[in-house]
Image 1 (cartoon, rainbow, N blue to C red):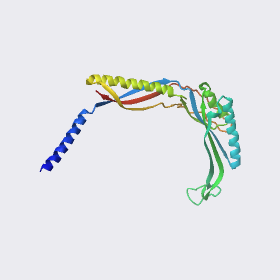
Image 2: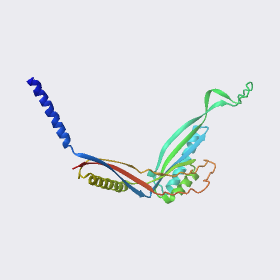
Image 3: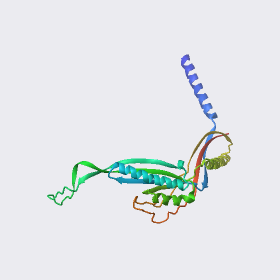
Image 4: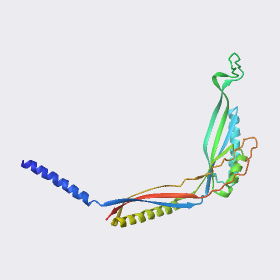
Length: 252
């Protein structure tokens, strides 16, 4: 019996110490803050596609290379740096014929003018060369859009605006978010009748989405002298950098 009493006494003593220890654990609160900085973008991003279709692969490669070089030459002459012109996609695709329209099947009603081939036949090749272009002089963005089409690009798409170096602006937004969270913590501490202690944890989130140009962009048929139907209006607007923080404080 004495052994059991000793064991139970030790168990309850340990449990009591844990309870007292939990009573001494500091009270914590979590607060969130938000900071916003609006700034005008200084870079325009767009993609230009040179698409070529020919019966012979070598002819398609030759024409696509020549047209692509014209597009690059135009960009460089417009002040776009070589480092800001990047090939983001290049693809060669065989073009297949699946039906033979010379074999007319008139016995079946309704008549089927083209019969399927036993095996698809390669009748040509398509080459796509897509450039990702960064325009740092926004006043020339509209000129670049029209110029790459005139130089031979079949399609211009994905125009967006962004801030090239946003680290300093993000730091300002972060400071605003921290100040916002700290102010909320002080108000909450006063209402609870306690004092702020040390910071237990900190986390950060946020975003700065690029501004996309929503209207359709210039498209022209390569080799047909296509031009843009209307001048392309380009307005960069403003971009908002948002930073949110969460701070956990100990309360005294």
